[in-house]
Image: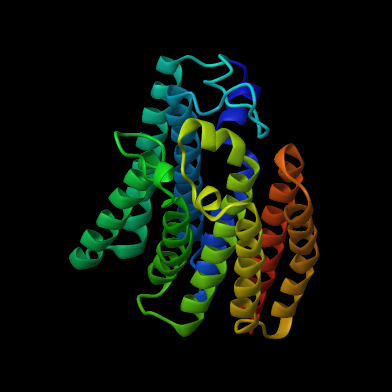
Length: 290
């Protein structure tokens, strides 16, 4: 199978969200273990890829991604990958994520049994959340709960979890960082759902954006970004003010959301992901050097 087809499936433009959450979580702890950071990044990226593959698989089986789709090509719906091939890829990524996650916990937690149990539970929930968005009899992504799940797993779970692995305590910086990462991740998903409103309505996928309707979904987007910036301001110090460089791509993305529909919002997605990465990288730099 050509590599470019699998790149379509894993949707690399969404991966900066996982990177942003882990880097910000590590920085919020005030100390960074490079080995733990590397394994946390690898595990988060694999979980993000798992979610993207499962999303392609679940929507493809339900016929959600039809010819009218305005987003990136889905490999199952377009016939470039078979059901069996995509299923095998999902199993492989689950195994890789579990291996990476166990290595991460071994390095970070040692023999702390209570911490092991807590993080094993979080890991299991993360895998189930990645699969359950579009898979199963009642996928939560079809009930408008995807936004809440994205906030929880890209915010508190990823950020505070990474911070705890670096230093076993809950810092105020970690709470603000979790809000920043969670809100910005919700903003990215909201753009995706605004873009796909027409197709989702036909397929019975009742996302939060579809439930709100276009005008309120656009207002919600502005609110998410405003709240994220307000939370980010609580973390800005020293070099952390470089985070302000991320406001320009975020503003450009918001303008597109407020004025465009359909395929034009693919650029808004890219700009918002770029702005998220720049903003969180700036905040992380300030937290580490402050």
